[in-house]
Length: 241
Ligand SMILES: C[S@@+](CC[C@H](N)C(=O)[O-])C[C@H]1O[C@@H](n2cnc3c(N)ncnc32)[C@H](O)[C@@H]1O
Image (cartoon, protein in one colour):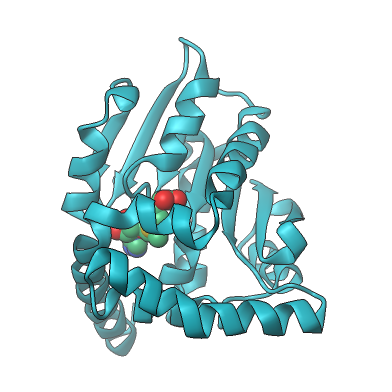
């Protein structure tokens, strides 16, 4: 890794941990309010889609307070282990305190350098975090290659993320909502001045679903497919190693 890129990664990392520590206590409430509860429906859909691929070991990367891990647990049965990894201690502390996540193994770590051997997992899920791994396309690619490394051959990578509606009118309405409402509402509930200002900025600049599909293919994945959720404001991508 060249030093300017290492510098970018370290600076972004420190800033993100500060932001996510600030928003952690109210993170779930803000999500439910801003999406009118749709985030719950989307996580359930994503978990159901991921669980179809079975296997024994699942990783919920950038797990936050464990909202998606909880859906995976519901579908995991007794023979599957779920690992939840995040680099913000206060997010993980909240997740660890949940009674519905007792079976999860929690790891404090950075997805850029996953502390797991090659070919460890059958399924990796990332929900609403890919935007944060994307200060530059090259850095995003490094993260995707790291997910690829720890997946077993034929293992599945599943990404749930906000997207860009393909209808220009809907896209514009969505961006107006993000630009003018997400930051003040997030700030009002969480009390974090910078948190939702930053998070709302990352939404309009994330890739469209077809472009993210191409990026996953470039990272080495095959059978990359996506489905839009609610008029394309979010999307689920699945990709196979
Ligand atoms: C928007 S939250 C999403 C949390 C959870 N996946 C969800 O769906 O509610 C993003 C999470 O990604 C974590 N995160 C961001 N970059 C990370 C990285 N490089 N390594 C590990 N965790 C990271 C943050 O700490 C935060 O908890």
